[in-house]
Image (tube, rainbow, N blue to C red):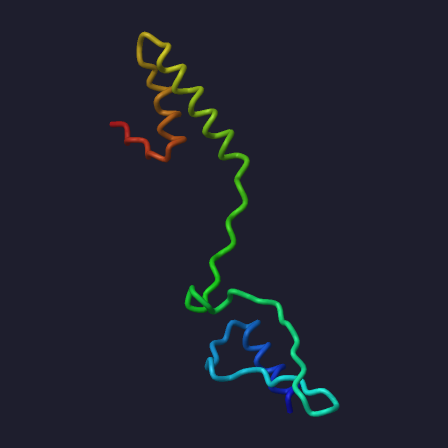
Amino acid sequence: MRAAIAFFLHAASDAEIPVSPHFKIPPVRSGNGKPVVRRTKSTTKGKADGGQTPPAPLPADPSADLRTRYIDMLLKKVEEQDQMDGELLDRIETLLGYEAEPKE
């Protein structure tokens, strides 16, 4: 019966199904009737964050660094020019996510 209870509670924990905090895994008893104290891995799941684990951080996008460097290079080029180049400014706006204005 202990194995069935332990299996259910571990399965519920792995599936992140909330169970009452009053349900505990029964202790393993040795041959002489005394409980055996076993150390389990401590997890922070279900403690301070209300049972939800934070999402794993996304891996750094290597193209984001290249994009930033490209935008910086274009901005320096704009600063060096005496006259504004509309095409260059349109490229910068496109990289920054601004939509092009409709031409009349």
